[in-house]
Image 1 (tube, rainbow, N blue to C red):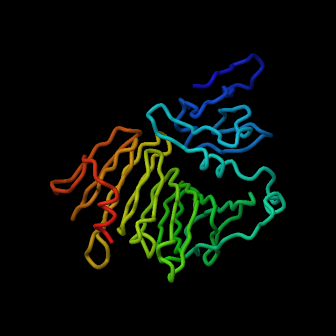
Image 2 (tube, rainbow, N blue to C red):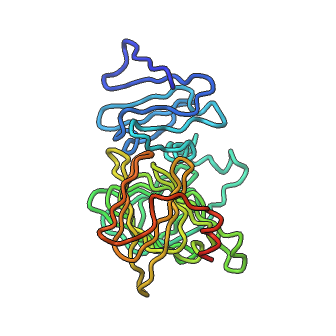
Image 3 (tube, rainbow, N blue to C red):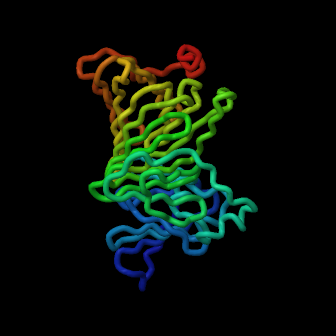
Length: 298
């Protein structure tokens, strides 16, 4: 765990935490601050702020492998997601610092109601409009009473609700080299509906959430991550052709197969998982052999 310093003279509502050598997790008691807060860098320090309260984790970015953030219920924001949310060291100077700077286009905004923003790896946030491109590494956020629809290059389609936030970590797609295709997105908070495209059937599509990682095998998935707690709910829907796919959820190293015909839902925070089948029999609450399951879905 980390040491907590509440020294005199700190602004009201501010907590300072000092990392200890070798710490790989930081416990954050205020889950709402952790999931809904604004992330920024102040030198090597991480600052998370929301509604007059803030958490400063000193020297967070000193290490090449900074710790994950863990809420009191076990929900996690991993270090790579924290790094994306905090943004560039110096917005606009990423290209110079990295020796590159070409943004990799991975999708297009199809529909938008209200306001939505994208912050690419160069750290310069921009308001999105229909027809705008999104890029690998973007942090996507929606405002109050807003909706956003994105079509990705592999034909995966995302619908994003109001007050949502996600990170487009990676999308590699070549229709002629399917074995090398992959997708990794991180759902931080909000509601999402997505219909998978060409990457999912290869077994290389992952959705990271505060509770675990879902390996998607081709399906219509409805997900909600509660930004005040990190608790999440997911259900698999029926696709346009009447079929349903499956997802494999990994929590604490255990694989759970989610596959059914009908309305099934699971809800979890950390390692506590509840399944609700609404009377429909499906496979869950059991460990599966991930290699066998991947082979059966090809």
